[in-house]
Length: 205
Image (cartoon, rainbow, N blue to C red):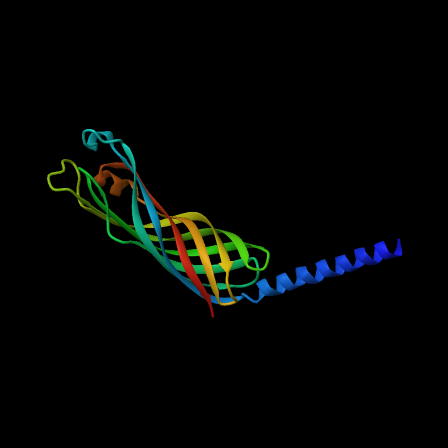
């Protein structure tokens, strides 16, 4: 019985020390960081029936390549704030309608959940400003060139894998922009909104 209690006590001490070591390792990631990466953006483009070219589906998902640059400050194991710039490589085109482009600046608050010493997941809430632009195809009836700068709010999720104390790989899924009603009217759309998934390299200073 004494041996059993000793073994249980030793296991409890080992578990406590291991948990403390993991917590300390995650705590060492406090401070400033920067990241940059590329990803896949998807624009959901719902055309008005009155502007819909023959033979097309009303709702289409248009894919494009995007990039992100960002930086932030991590206060503790569970919370960070950051700013980021998001842009597309080129424009999103829809046959018979025109070309659409969007880019945004975002300020985000992150809630982080460490899982072990190297891996963690996070959720984030973002606010910011997006710049949307639309150029109709030549000869389009009822469509016009449009541009706007709008306020945005978005939710996102992601994960980090820390290779070292300084370098990590980051996966991020978030919303980018949503066109307002005046813009959509000129673009012949009921809805235009964009989201992205990016893979970035992160460096902690």
